[in-house]
Each structure stands twice: as C-alpha cells, then as structure tokens.
Length: 172
Image (cartoon, rainbow, N blue to C red; front, side):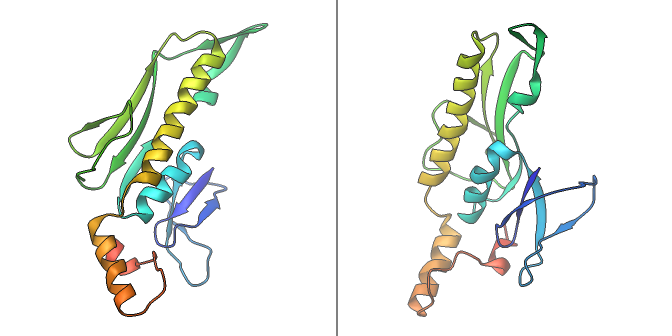
C-alpha cells in the first residue's frame, strides 16, 4: 500500500499497516504524518493537497480486487457499480468539475460506472478513463487562493518557488 505525507507530500510504501496507528514520515527534516491512499488515487490526492485542497479521504473502489475468475475464460463481478470518490476537508468552490463527476454537499466528489459492462476490457477502459479524467482535473486546477497568496508573498520576499508551507496547511 502507498501513503502520502501530509506535510511534505512525499509518497511512501506502507508495510504492516495497523488500524489507528500513526505513521511518521521517514524524511529526517519532515516528520509529518503519512496517510494510506489507494494506489490509483495517489497522484490525484497528492496534487490536490499540494494545491491547497485538503482531502479527508478517497476511494478508487479497487477494480482489480473485485474481479475474480468464475470459469475458464470468464470473470464475475460481485458489485452493481464502481464509485470513484474524493472527500474534502472543507467546502471548496471549484471553477469547474471533472467531466462525469458530481459534487455533493460541497465536499464529496464522485463518479460511478453502472454494471454490467461487457466485455471486461470495456469496464477497465471506463474505469481508468475516469481515474485519468480526475487526474487531469487535479492538474488543471489553480492553486487554492490562500496558497496562491502565500506563494505571491514568498516571491515578493525573494524566496524561490516554495510549495511546502506546513504552518499554513494546518489551517485547512
């Protein structure tokens, strides 16, 4: 399983995950907290948090883990749909949403794939298209206004391009 440090945004492999245990970042300077993230969502969640859109949770619905062989040459799926979702800490007013996704209550972004979808390759294509759509959206989002203002202040003071702002990020 992979995880992201909420302070420096470094991606780490998590081994021996214990429910409720706190995992500290291994970077000597950082020592932030690492949270587990679905592998298909790791870059999306990292980008959103780096841009100041703090997330509370996500789920890629583990497409590969839901598929199991039922007979030779066929695959059964034990679900009615797949839902890809991101849950934010706060309500954000995004300038646009990713195609095919809906925002509920200002904090819950999601999109689903209704089943059955045949053949399996079409289901996989739809699934990864949604993941890629979400990734492209995260990449295209502007910085959160608070982060953008902080970066502008840093430039005025002559600092280099700094995205690591631990004191500011705890405010969200």
